[in-house]
Each structure stands twice: as C-alpha cells, then as structure tokens.
Length: 328
Length: 255
Image (cartoon, rainbow over all chains, first blue to last red; front, side):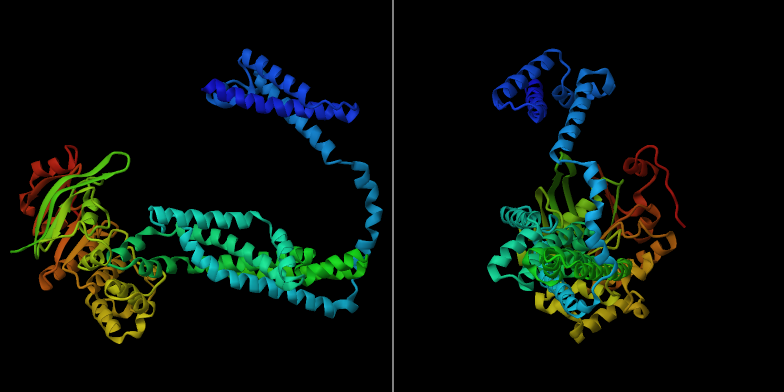
C-alpha cells in the first residue's frame, strides 16, 4: 500500500520534472514530440528511483524514517533541490522577466508621474460626485448584506445546527454556497451584473453585495462558533426554546464583533468598489478607466489622489471604531 | 416525606468509550438538601445534567414526581426543565446584559418567542424579577452589566435567575468552586435559605466536606460513575473519606 502511494507520488513528480525539461529544450530547439518521450522518461525515472529505494515519493510517505537523514545526504534530497531550481528557471522564462525593460522603461511613465504631481483640479467636482457614488454603493452593498449574512451565519454555525440529517444538510448547503460565491471574485460578479442590469453603480453594488454576503456569513458564523457555550447551556436549562436560546445566549455575545466585522467590510467594499468600477460597476473606478484610456494623465492623477485620501480616511476611522467595539 | 426524583439504572456513555455513569439508582425526597461528593471526573456534573436532560442519558429512566421524563420531547421537555433551576461553577450568565435581563431570562420557559423579544415592557414580569434580585441582595445593581460584578455577586444573580423559574428543584454544579471561602459560604447560605424557607429541593455538588456537613441534609458520593455512599453528613469518617477520595487524600478545612 505504502509502495503504491509512493509510486503514484513519484509518477506525479517525475511527470512534472520531465515536463519542465521538455519545456526548457523547446525554448532552444523546435521539437514537437512532447508526450511519448515525456511518458517514457517519467516511467523510467520512477522505476530507477524506486529500485534504489530513495525517491521523493518514499520520502513523503515514510517521512518519519527519512526525515532523520539530512537533506543533502540522500538522493531524494538532491532531487527536491533540483526540482526547486528547475521550477524557478521555468517560472523566470514563463513570466518573461526582463531586468533591462524594468530599468530602461522608466521614461515611459513620465505622463502618469506628471499627472500625479499636477492633478487637474478643474475636474474636482465631477470626480467628487463619482467618488460619492463609490462610497454610497459600497455602503449600500454592506448594509443590504447584513440581514442576509446575519440569518445565514446561524445556519452555517456548527455548534448551532443539530447533528441530524436536516441540520447537516442546511449547514453544508449554506457553507458551500457561501464558499462558492466567495471564491468567485467580485470583479467577475460585476461582469455578470453589468450584463444583467446594465453598466453603472447598481451593477457594482450588486456585485459587492453578493461578495459581502458570502464573506460576512463566514466571518459571522466563525464568531458564533467561538462563543462561550456556558450561557447557551444555562438558557436551554431554563426551558427556553431554540430561538429564545439564540436570542438570549448567542446574539448578546456576537453583537459587537458583528459590528466590527461589518465596518471592516465597508472599508474593504470601498476599495473593491474602485476595482469593480473598472469593469463597468460605476463610480470612481469607471471614471478612472475612461480617463486612463483617453490618456488624460492629469485627470488620472486627480482620481488616484482622491481614492488614496478616501481609503486612508476610511482605514483610520474604521480602525478607531473597531478598537472601541472590541473593548465592549 | 414524599419522593420528588428517582433514577433507575441511569447510564451515560460518552464517545470514546468513556462511561461517565454506571447504573445509578437514586431517590431524592422533596425538601432535601442533597450534597454530591466525589473526585473531579467521577460523574457529578453528568448526573446533574441527566436529571434535567441537558445531557441525554444512554439508558435508564428518570422520574420526576412519579412521571417518567426521560422520553419527553419538545414543549413537554421544556416544561419539565422549567421546574429545575440550575446554577453552575462558571455562573453562565450573559456578561453583556444587565442583572435585570439576566434574571428575567429565567422566565423564558413560560414566555412565547414574541414576548421574549422585549420583556422589559411587561411590568408584572419586571417586578417579579426585581423581587428576586432583592432576595439575593443586589437591588443596587439591577441595571449593572453582569460582567462588572464580582464572582460572588454573579453567582447570586444566577440564583435569582433560577428563582425566576419558580423551581421545585435547584441543581447546583459546584456552585462555589470558583469563589473564595468567605464568598462561598455566603452563596451556600442563600441556597440553604431557599431550601428551608421555600422548601426547594437542592442537589448540590461540592468539593469541601466542611460545607457538606454544614448545609447538607444527606450526602451521596460518586466514584468512577458509581454511587458508593449515601447517608448523613456526619457518617463520613476517616475511612469513608478515603473510600471516596482515595488513600492519599487529606481533608482540607476551609474556615
């Protein structure tokens, strides 16, 4: 059994290893047969290293025995080091890292830099209104997310859901839904909602709303899972129903962390609103994207300053409020 | 004397093959002050919680007032739980709420969900809560948040909460184990008063024999989940003491 899993691990490692080598060969020679030599080399290497009983797979499966040996004393240790070096080299080529571009291309940013140092203040009023749009859409997304996340957080808390078929079903369904909508980035939700309701702040608000519900559900339910169980037991012991127990023993313990997380979420939503705006979600992000494509660098400079100032202020205020809430 | 509680063959297994209770047969008379002794882990907490079904026994039966309560569900179970006030070593109050609301929470078993959303609007209920707060001598702290009170005061709030249930039995799970000796005695005095004046049956687990002798009308001892002694507190001599607590134990006086 152990041998089988070691062989599977080795096959995966050597497939990657030969893949990297063939990729490197292809950088210098045109050689279009990948698969057959790759498979042959992979199998060959696996067989050889399995025969000498010192491969990466064995090292992982029987880590206790092999960890006692030093990395440089074993062939598998050297293989790991070789694998890391090859990975870095391949990565360097794929990412097209180019130091001279980095050093010589500086001049091209003159436009943006001069825009940053002399922002076009004549456009202050329209840009401020776009900024207000961003702040309000972030605020609405946060506020509308609260009731949904509040409700879902109870259903997604392990300690509140009974360990029965329906209890587990609800718990897993809410958890999966929340994980799924969180793993889809807000920018992708924005693209969907721009098609759905049209380009503008409403689409941006909906995108942030979906993401906020999912994120707050997770943060809230973790808070519930961390509550002190003593009061829950005590309230249950008075003959209270499940809902009464939640009302008296759970909610009073979670109110102030909930508020702190919500304010933090608003803070994040303002940042995300600018990104979401870039794909049509309205507000200052949309303005930034338009001005940047017209190469009006002085307007871009103004927008960057405005965003930076707002985020700086939000960060400060929300930090203060959260610190105060945690004392409660 | 009439019987109020009876257990028959009560057993509790926890996952991982831990047998917390092995066949407990126990009769409790109405109006007793029953003290539960035994080492930590001997099953005292489990026994208390099996009586009001905060823990489901694996097998066996509990009778309350001749009525079998081990198979009750839903509203019937909650109705029975109302009759058991319970106080805990860690008080288990809600620290963020006022003394008044904590005491009112003892009445939840008699309230609908809608009534429990804003109980302070119910003048009769608030008055009853204030009377119970006065009984434990905390009138000046009615609006204080519980987390700002001392340990002894918090345990008195917990007693007032239990009184709010108008209980027939009070289960006390090491009520004084986290209090200093002087405060511990004053909390025990309140329990003794409820036992004498209101006729409430009290089942109280304790760690100190001196308190058991002072307040208990009967003592039972648990060892490894078995009932191994039942008798008056005076009957516990040196030999019995070593039976309960092991050969190496020394009795500590707290005075």
